[in-house]
Length: 101
Image (cartoon, rainbow, N blue to C red; front, side, top):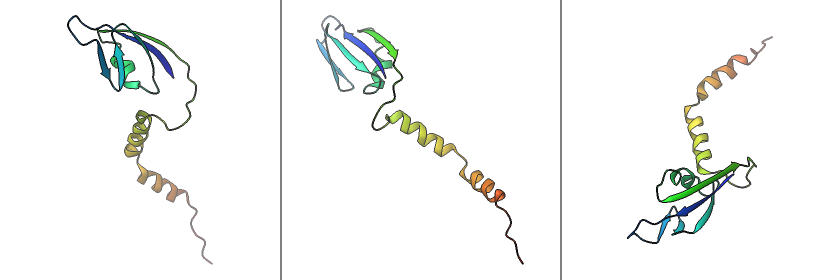
């Protein structure tokens, strides 16, 4: 999990708070986020001119619970692209022929 802090700097004449991806940012207040709960914000806020963004190092500790959607999506894509028929043909070719007496 990678942790980061983001501080919103509201443009002059704009709202003093904003809500991005379910996280509320108030002007000048630092908000802690992490890559497990808000992976979409980790990349989005880095390039945003109205945010001061500081990311920490990835601690690479395994998470408990359900994997993030991006991991599930990756698994689904790999399964979709896999040639299961080739697996069946290979398994069938490895079977020993039946002996008849």
